[in-house]
Length: 326
Image (cartoon, rainbow, N blue to C red):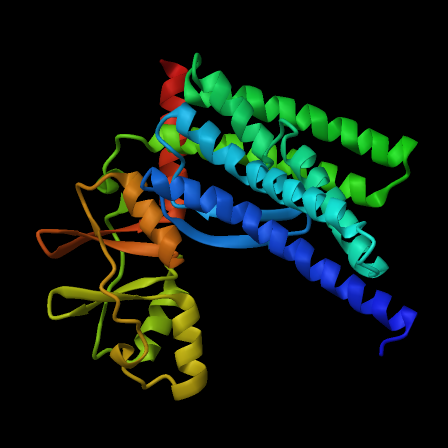
């Protein structure tokens, strides 16, 4: 039999595990609801203040975004309801497990706190997405995001002031900083997507770059790496692109096999490319999904360019300057 201290220690561990389970279930609520609208979830990331279900894209309609955003808090509400019923039954005379009762009560309180916290109208919380979607019913999406971002940053400043000068709570200050940065990042991402919307991949591709053949030794890649600013190199087999030798792969190949190793023995032969005429947003989505720093661009099966994040940033600056002139 466990002593009282050991029982409470195990109860504390169990409570922590159950809290993580509730966070995962919250994010699964978002993911499963998004799947109803044909949106896949790349993964679920646990953060210091909760978790994030990283969707491949946001819903097309504001009404859909509202449903997806509220699905997570709805899960917490459902869990809290079940726990409330369980807590009511737990006080029956035939049950004498005080630790179990404490766990249920704590988990009920935590789920209610998660529900309320996530409904705060600030990114990255669900309330921020609900606010943006409600505004987007009447306003352009970028403007709605800007307003929701400013509201979120205002709330973050209030959190920061309260944490520093009133409650003297470092954790609240950390949360305030996280929310402030996340709100700004959300607006930047949406504005970038709007800027790039409708543009083909060729609009942002680099047209002057070095390539490697599968038979080239790694020392050739080193020479080209040192001679310019290009860090990733399309690899050809004949005239067909078969992969992209990244700087990380080059360094790993040098460490494991030496400079005379053929490029073809090191490069990942994923044949991941972008069509010159395909939407730039789609090409960037594929880059993010496969965690690639660049992407060879082809037209009719022939290599015509290379898409890099740096060049996409340059295109955005140009588009922004032209929009201001107009």
